[in-house]
Image (cartoon, rainbow, N blue to C red; front, side, top):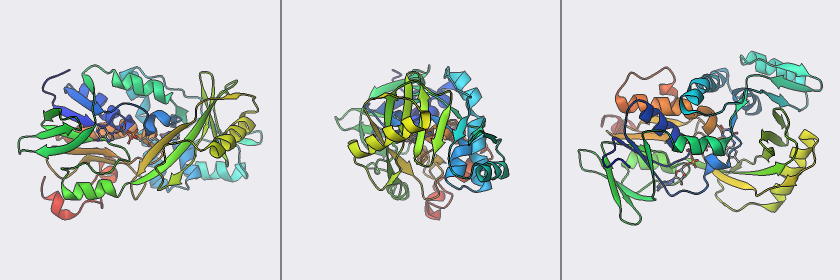
Length: 345
Ligand SMILES: Cc1cc2nc3c(=O)[nH]c(=O)nc-3n(C[C@H](O)[C@H](O)[C@H](O)COP(=O)(O)OP(=O)(O)OC[C@H]3O[C@@H](n4cnc5c(N)ncnc54)[C@H](O)[C@@H]3O)c2cc1C
């Protein structure tokens, strides 16, 4: 562990670890504080899916284009950190496949009819749990098991105090605490922003079976291939934080997943994660308006898709580089933090 990190990241989900990995690759000494255990990122299916997300969520052209640019950062990100990216596309098995093809074309995605279904090569995937482990092991990133209780700023930098009393200091801190409520010691406008993040519970069920060659999605959910079967998901339960799996949901997910794949299989342990969502559904990433405090939060259901984009924007902001084109769309200051906080730097 570095005794004097340049940056402390609070939270080891995909947003915290993507930011940490990007900063480490740029030569920063980064310490990540996290209690360990499951989080939204380890529950996730790992789809890098700008096309299907745009179709299913009825997104605007601008929003869809941003998701696509986020996806386009993945090949370089995966190669830099040794992650395996699967470019096998996705199928949509819903009603009106011709209408869905037309909608995807209008949003700038490739799509074609494949029998009764639609196929797009524009959606990719990773294995979320494996990728999370690999991002934790990036050179230059030290990970410490700790739950941060509060932050303080003495003018020269930030000090994080854990629940057990341990302390760490650094000139810069990245808050990447997922759907958690605001930590003590955050400036009031940032605390208000964090507390406005909507929790959205998601449940997903792994099934051991013959894996399909690509993600299959339909109105009842999806089946995403893994090494030994599929992940059948996922619910979107706004406002809910209950971490225990609901057996009725599990049963429905198994039935839906196996009907999409046409396979027989054995269900594994269901996964539950709490996504955090901003009011406009885009992540909150970059300088907070308070010097040295940076945010990597609230990517709703696209945290994996947008991890590399968030990591790049956070690292640019922390280094004082000129913001890239998409930084304004993700900026914490876009509408959520009041002007008084902006004058703080
Ligand atoms: C079932 C399901 C399926 C999904 N599928 C996909 C998908 O296919 N593709 C996709 O792009 N996205 C998917 N998502 C969404 C994606 O998982 C989330 O957007 C993303 O994981 C959020 O990442 P995060 O880093 O913001 O939060 P998290 O992964 O929740 O990480 C936050 C971390 O902060 C830590 N933390 C909180 N408070 C403290 C504290 N005080 N001190 C220290 N650490 C703290 C937590 O322990 C946690 O480890 C899915 C989500 C779910 C639930």
